[in-house]
Length: 272
Image (cartoon, rainbow, N blue to C red; front, side, top):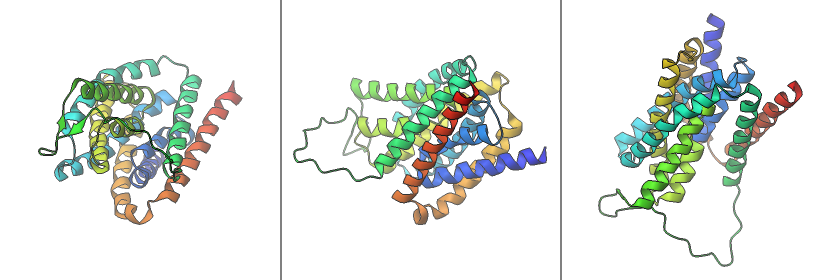
């Protein structure tokens, strides 16, 4: 019992540290760690990871709210649509074979790794850049709030649906969906996008955790120490993030994530 609790807390601390150093996408390693080290299935690991991701994101969201940079109406809309579809993903996760679910997770992890690596690679300058359309959600210069239109509402709602479904299905917070979606759909500054994303992750994760708890499928013996470790790891990581974070760290994370994705896929193929 003590070894399981301490092991869960230690793994959670690793996840929290990665989250602090690499951003919202770093939490996607929570499920693979639970799979390989604690030998949980994806369906068992997903809600535990979601609990840790949600609590860790809540810390960042509270900090963002106090700083006044969370676009809370946008976060609320995305959270509502995400909350409606999180139970759908959770329902499907418990009806899919573990092998297929593992392969799906490895594909998502590989996608996140590739995109994170690309973000750290300087892009080649274009000789003639095409004229880009304005994003559907524009900040009002006077109020600092979004000017709500039908296209803005639709873009944010669809992003929330995708994040919510994946959070229930795979136990990921959805930051790798929400952040790019907000960048495409809005002209908000990066710090506001990150803070708003954390608020959405907090609310959507809470719905997934509650659905799992009500269904009696949450492994609290692993989940509570894992989540507590993640929060402590994230708080500690924030103290050193400015000195350690950077392109090389992001590339290192992307490489590790890619290797884990290959390992997960190979494990399923070899077991078949």
